[in-house]
Image (tube, rainbow, N blue to C red; front, side, top):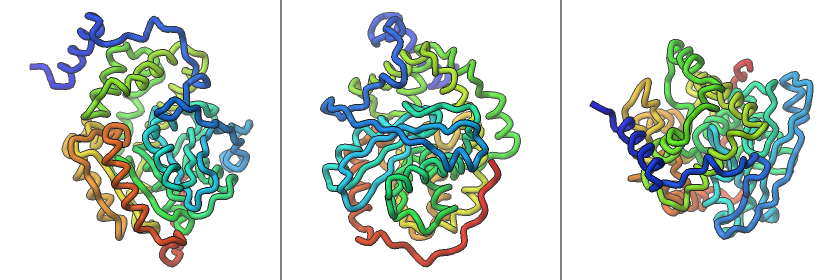
Length: 356
């Protein structure tokens, strides 16, 4: 008997073959630097770059990488810093950046090292602690005090690492389908290392990309999201895709080593909301654990005192894209409850970070 996932892959493959689903593999290559970073109305976002000098020095990197970022409404009084997930880039916040800038917030979205328009250095550690240091350097360089960290999946684990190690800095956390709460044994961590490779990522056929994006991340897929497929398919034959694939492999290993986050949730002082899709098909890991996303999110909710837990019905892992209206409403309601000063509880000593 075929599993539902296998049946979905077969259906997508048949749809591509029949022409019912658009194929992009014959289109010209599209480098990361040419990805259109635009609003829903097609207005280009101003993309800037920042060298990570302090992060490079901290991790003994021979060259200083640069990260790309977008800033909207720089005069806003409270700053939201958006951190994307594994394999994605800041455009995955397309339904949020302009919407929250229009509400009066200063909005910053970062392409993490290895992703999007940022440099993809092999020497970068790709741990969540290193990712957090990169985000923190951007925050400090732009003069942001008390940022609200909005992280999706890997970006959620990055935000958690930031808030644990520097508990007096964030004003709040918006954890969106966050990684970091699920427990992995040492055997499962070893499995991740064996199962993921650059070759696997580079050799994925188009129907598999359709499946991994559409079926695994969404419960309410709609045609307007096909840019996710197009950009992923067309970028694969570009020169820096190898570096991107390598970054993904290293990052998966970093994500699996989440004991630091799991063991130190009690050190988080910032007001926190955990938002997730009740129909998440990626958390918990479907190959290793199975089960309900709610069970994993409740672990984090129990560990972060005073946190809110909000599950959105009929929404998948990429909940901010899948259910943008419900997601934005929940985030807006949370932000309105924050103290005007962005203050937090009295400072506690943070635990030491794990070694990169």
